Amino acid sequence: MIRSMTGFGRERMVLGGRDILVEIRSVNNRYNELSIRLSRAYLYLEEPLKKLVQEYISRGKAEVSVTITNISAPDTSIAVNTSIAKGYVDALRKANDELGLMDDLSLSRITHFQDIFTVVKAADDEDQMWNDVKTVAEAALKKFVSMRENEGARMKEDVLGRLAAIEQMVGVIEEKAPETVAAYREKLFAKISEVLADKAVDEQRILTEAAIYAEKIATDEETVRLRSHIEEFRTILEKEDIVGRKLDFLVQEMNREANTTGSKAQNIDITKTVIGIKSEIEKIREQIQNIE
Image 1 (cartoon, rainbow, N blue to C red):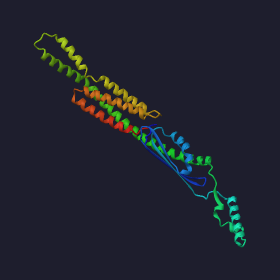
Image 2 (image 1 turned 60 degrees about the vertical axis):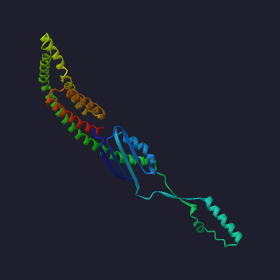
Image 3 (image 1 turned 30 degrees about the vertical axis):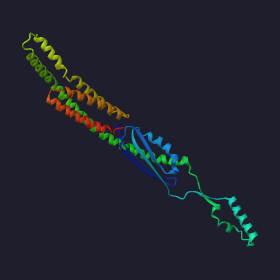
Image 4 (image 1 turned 90 degrees about the vertical axis):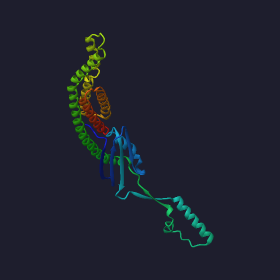
């Protein structure tokens, strides 16, 4: 299945008293780059989240954003620092003895000293937190992959259409090539004969030399290789694999064969056809830059 490197997936769920939102977006890139956005309190989720996402993405630049919001009051408890409380009591009693104050050291009096008490939030269950985030992330990733596959299917159809157009143009070159070689051979023979008109040279030898030089403009090998690359391209497009780099290599090879054919062309129709082939190859190249 061909996949685009461009995609987006979003999922939101309420699990364990928390609103969890996961968003994943990606753009094309030669390599596999991944960044995770998490609040500081949940940084321990970064590594397992990276491993999970990389199971779904092999190529491209992706960004994952995770937002976690508590929608119910967290479990809390009150801790009493008895050492500080004892210090306050001892200090007050000393002041009472030295200054002759009334002894009013009731519990309600001590509660005025706020640093004696600390509100303690219950620690997150990290395993449960990861399970909840993983559930949401997997749902977002499925949407993300689905979008990439849908886009990839459209790209595949476009590329197949362009390959068919190139194949048709290769056929035009194959039809024109023999008459082009023959015309070039006759032209060479006439020119050589003119130059050597006043010399005793065997006519058969002139014909042979003209034929040898004429064959240098033959494009049979190039068109055969172009057809081979087109078939290989189609085969790769059907594979369940990461194919972007393979297709990129084939495009380079097809472009090289087209350039060689163009450089050999001694016919205006072939030259125009080669320009058409190169135009389609360039459009294919632009498409596959976004294939995973």
